[in-house]
Length: 388
Image (cartoon, rainbow, N blue to C red; front, side):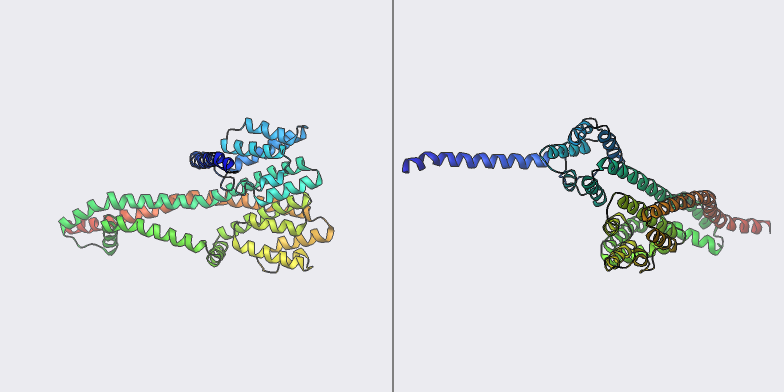
C-alpha cells in the first residue's frame, strides 16, 4: 500500500499541474476570445430578421432544422451570429429543443421570440412561426425607423440653429465689439446683450463649464431614468409632449397590437401574450397599464375592461378589443389596429417632416436676423450723428 501511494504521488502532482495549466490556458483563451459570452452577445435586428426569414424558407423546403442552421451559419456575413447559430445547431444535434437553445442568448432572442418558437414547436407549425417572427421584426423595425426619423429631425434643426448662432457669436460679433469700443458709441440694449453673450461664449468659463454641465445633466438623467420612479415620471412627461407625445402613444399601440396579434395567431393564450408585450414596450406607463390589465384579466374580467382600467389606452383600442372579444375575432381586430396606427404614424411623420423644412429656414433666419440687427443698430445711430 505504501509503495502504491509513493508511486502515485508524482502522478497526483503532475495531474494538479496539468489542471492548473488547463485552467490558465482557458482563462487566457477567454480573455483573448473575440466571441462574447452567450448572455452578453448582441446582434443587429436586421441580421436577425434575415436569419429568421431564411430559416423559415429552409424548413419549408424540407431541410432538417440542425442542418439548416449549419447551412445558414456557413453563409453568414456576421461572424458573431454565425458562431451563435453553429453553437445552436450543435446543441440541437445533441437532443436540445430550439427554444431552450435560444434562451441561452437573452440579448439576441427576446422573450417574445422564444415564446413564439415554443408555441410553434408544440403546435408543429415552426416554419409558419418563424415566418411570422421575421414579419413582426420587419414591421417593428419599420415603425422604429419612422419614430427615430420623426424625433431626430427637430434635433437636427436645433443643432443647425445653434451652430449658426455660435459661429456668428464666436467669429463675427467680437470684431464688432472691438469697433464699438474704439468709437465709444452708446449701444442699444439688444446690442449690449449680444456683445455680452458673445463675450461669455468665447470665455474660458464657457469652454470649461459647458462640457461639465452637459456631462452632469446626462449623468443625472441616466441615474434618474434608471430608477423605477424616475423612469415612470419621465415616460409620463414624454407622453404629454405636444405633438410627439401622441406620436409615441401611437407607436406603442401599433407595436403592442402587432405583437399581440402575432402571439395569438401562433396559439399563445391572450394573457400570456400580454405578459410578453410588457417586454416589447419601451414606455413604463404602457408597461404598467399592460401589467394591471393582466392582473384583472386573470381575475376573470374581459380584456377590454382590463385595458381601460388605467385610462392610458386610447378609446379606439378598447372599443376594437371589445368587438373582437364579442365576435371571437380578437386577433383580426388587433391586426386592423396595428395597420391603422402604422398608417397614422406614417402620415404624422410625413406631415412633421414637411412642416420642419420651412421651420429650419425660419429658425436660422430669426437667429441670424437678430444678431445682424443688433450689430447694425449702433451703426445707424453713428451715421445719423455724423450727418449732424
